[in-house]
Image (cartoon, rainbow, N blue to C red):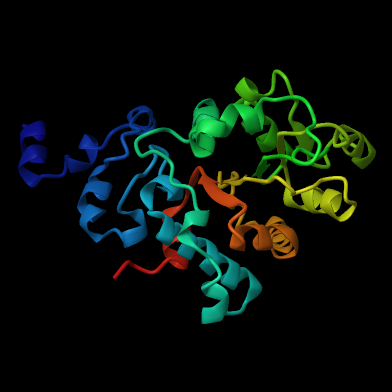
Length: 277
């Protein structure tokens, strides 16, 4: 009779909860909580979202909104507001829109880059010889900026399709001396990948040139503490110093485009970007 009385009182509800093994195994992003909250998600999170959670800015948002996110992030970091005249110097054409529904992982990186360069990808990224007057030494067409050395190495593995005839240059401090990087930059360089501080240092030294820079990829992958390129304090400051000192002018003049790669958290996206009107 004991089981009958327990069922009648309704006290067995707790026993219906999934055990630890089941809870860990269940990775479906459409959980009950997500389903209930879907209607209430802010505008920045309403489009493409990777399985791991977050917002793929370059696929989820049109170029105009990507640019707004970028410039608002700049204002937050600099603790100032850009004037209408300064904002007017930017065009949404400086932001790259990536294909929707395609993963933004290391394996897909090369295909995304190829699409961003279009018909000129082989000429810009694969040729191995200097060309007097148009391709100077140490002047990459593609610059990839990430949080750290290990992530830079991961991203470079995704670009192997381009580096058979011209090696990419690793531009970070870990295990590589500045002098070694300066030596590598004395030849043709199509792809450079690294961290903001070392990139800026090599530009300051006039070893790294931006004369033919066409695309800057900003890797937005989050670290274990959920910081990204724009939110990790020291690295963020170093990135915006690099941008203000060297990249900004290239972007405003239309010579260089920006491409976000990977997802930012919904919290970070909506903290920076207000809902679309």
